[in-house]
Length: 319
Image (cartoon, rainbow, N blue to C red; front, side, top):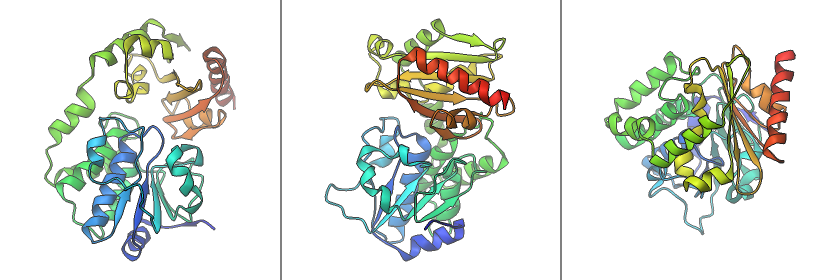
């Protein structure tokens, strides 16, 4: 039976349990990695045994935050916690063995499936990192290392505080985390101002194949395996590439379709929620997320998935 708990109750939970394993989601972003690293450091600070389950999909942009925190192969946890995971489909392959025994899920997605024994959920938070911060500051000191990890969580999910989900609370959390003493300049430069040359090549290919709809307010871009091979790009080069189309003047809604190595198509929507609800669209496609940012995974050829996405968008607009 699932129980919904408050941040205060979650803080009490962490102080009364031990031997933690923290899970992150597939294609891990800064929010899930930052939350896991911050929570793990906070638990170790108060004498708890805590590790993060290794996620092979983590890119070198975020892996430095996991150094020294990942679980050894023979680790047998007593308590399993997930951070920023809204659905069962977002469990990485290595984490699926824990799906039926998640003790606590901490999340901010309105599409949360309540798979854990207890859930600490606040869909009004711009980032799951804000929720983790509210929890851990009740029992741990916010050191520079801990503060930086949670700052990464908050800032990346807000797009360096440019996305529509950014509010005063997100800025306040970031300011408080900065007061822990880490230097935000190299963090922001690495995460938001630096692109690899291969990334720039990918973006040029996306522009060349871009499809504009709805009088230029909706943009669809396609990233095929052939394009990725042509550039020689890695996952690191494609971090948050779904946010690219939103930089184009006049575009309110961006659709990024990326062909995966196993033949699926990853769908990413970034929308103006006042114009189009991204979660509602992706729910029709078997996915979920937020009103302004959501995703799904689909089978089929790129052209078929494109048509399915367009149809789902039309359905949501017509409802």
